[in-house]
Length: 244
Length: 196
Image (cartoon, rainbow over all chains, first blue to last red; front, top):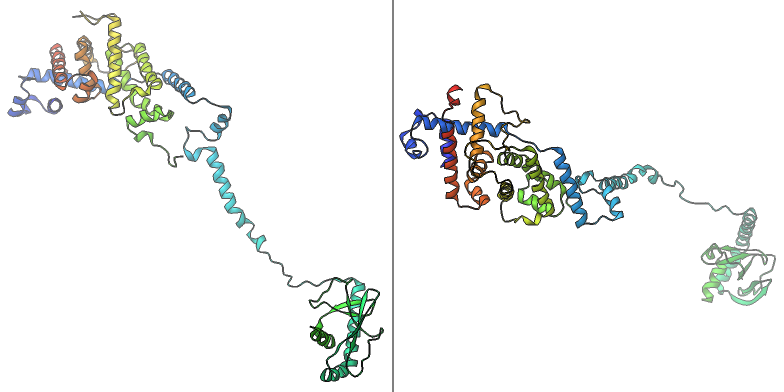
């Protein structure tokens, strides 16, 4: 009711009030003079509210801030390592403005960016498809001479081996070990001839360990042996298959 | 860890008090920004416009909030609570001074009609009226003056004033009625409305 009274008094003049309004507020005013006196009071009150604005001194706020800080120290004692935490993670700043969060964000961005920066280098492929072994000149020469002997043997015994294979399967006649090399005498059927030292000998050497072929067949002389695929020597291939 | 910034400006007074209890400095800053000026004005009106004393009272009141935030009951309205604390501080000051009783017509030596720091006296034709109004306001009895100040100058509702003064609403209304009529009667020789 009082708020309504104040609104009516401030908005209207006495003559503008209706009879019902005058009756409702009869205890407050009975004539125009009393109405105007009340209007003076409320007008001055409104003016006081607008003009009388007081602002405390800054010293008051500073003093209260110090009090607050001391009070918080009592509740939460500050340890030395908290100083660093306060430096990198201050509570009075927004989250995105705290140094620790900013460092973490920069680190994450770098981790995500580095793979793309070095992408070109990572995709550089090695054009080399196959690798050629660079053998030592001596080994190369031995392999070349062994290949020549092998070709000669193939040429010479080709017909004989073919005939022997058709008749009798070759079998190991005898084994002798000369200079660490095991010399195998193969009985090739009707001939029964042993392998001469000057022609390529099929030997098994336990001293030579670096076979280049999975079969591990060594061909060569009694002093020099080299590995060769078993399929290149039908005779020894048949020997192996016969032996096993 | 909160992912979003706490909007202290949108928090209620009661929420700010809870945050202060938890050690939130920014909540205290926000609460101070909201209530420091109104409380200073209230103390100025209730303590004979003594600026120094009013500043001290504001400091003491907020110091109580800093030291003992648990004194505030979260189920209550903070506004009524803080004004009730302010009112009690004024009453204690009155008891100390013992100058309010027996004053009928004059100014007390604590009275200072003019606030040197204010810019109230702007219009010459209203000068005397304003002086008389303020004198009459201060001449009011304490209980009527506090009811009138809380209602018309601080903007509290009848219910809130009843809570602050720990009286019923009917008593608040009667005190307001008496204070308003007293002021209107004491200023009847002035008619600034006609002159405007």
